Figure 1 (cartoon, rainbow, N blue to C red):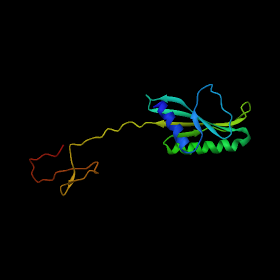
Figure 2: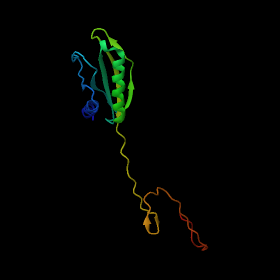
Figure 3: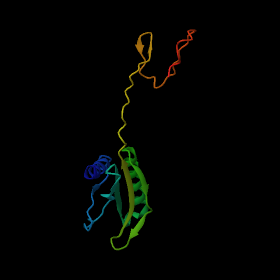
Figure 4: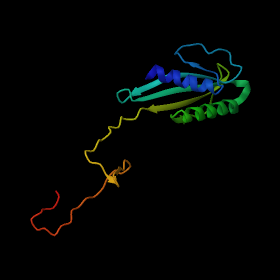
Length: 151
């Protein structure tokens, strides 16, 4: 799920018109003319059912922190729509690179498969099965004292 999910996040952001690419530790950051998002795997846990992605939004220093915050908010909106739980860190400035950056944490959790319970009983009304009935109560009324209650 990890590489697939990173690719999914990159595609989601790119489909929204954002400049996103895979992040690699130690990779040189290209000269920024507009916000760019580096997407990488942060953590996999719970037997691979929980995948955490780190998307770092970089913005040129000359554009100011607002441009970085706006791009991060836009990226978060796209990831929320794709089913992620998201959290943004505050905006910071890197003087060496002359850029602002914000870290966006996105978590995707695969739900546990739900076993469908097949009941041996069918509830009908006028001979037609009622598939939407999830529970019912049944009782037997009789005046015959030799018949015992349903158990």
